[in-house]
Figure 1 (spheres, rainbow, N blue to C red):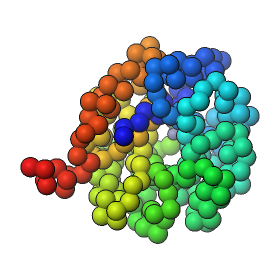
Figure 2: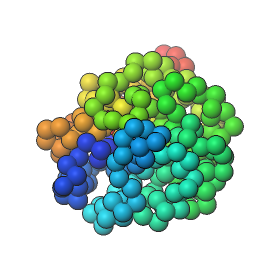
Figure 3: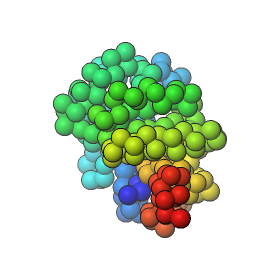
Figure 4: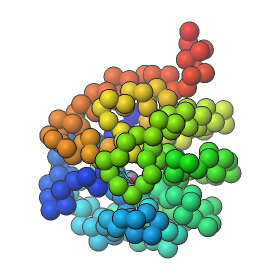
Length: 232
Ligand code: DX5
Ligand code: ZN
């Protein structure tokens, strides 16, 4: 199933609760919440108190992307604040296996993120322990950047690895996702789509609906080039 995860980093922070309701009414399945510590990435965004305050505004899934050094220090607190999925950067964890265990121990879904230049081999020993892999398609830290084209091949390769191992792991893509490249990313094998500026610039509900139409129209698309070959 293809899922839209609007990133509230591009929202109006003075109106977050209201904007969350708009996303919900328009049908976006996840809320993507970018936590930044000013160390792993240059920016500082928001943390647990904001997540906790937003929780009553929607029943949608809170997908928390931790751009934080050693996020293991905060897993329990983020879980208690209302996260449903907690995603940590492989680059930020000295003990990645342990942090994934912590997330699962809290009863939450575990995601691992790779920066654009981090090879897929970082996932070799933990792929079967995670619910989702997030492939960054910009260097993290800011909204509104341009999609890095080589990530499309990385998505296809990861989908192939997941398929070969008989796993069902979601592939999320984050950074520079727009109405124009969403279909290409579905074809590559991604199924969870983060969009910040493309959702919050202009009419939020209209943008969400347009994204959902593309995601639904392409829901039956073969997930790998190999599968496409077989169908021919
Ligand atoms: C970037 C964040 C993204 C960001 C995406 O570091 O992880 O979630 O909000 O913004 P857009 O969709 O504008 O590239
Ligand atoms: Zn993000």
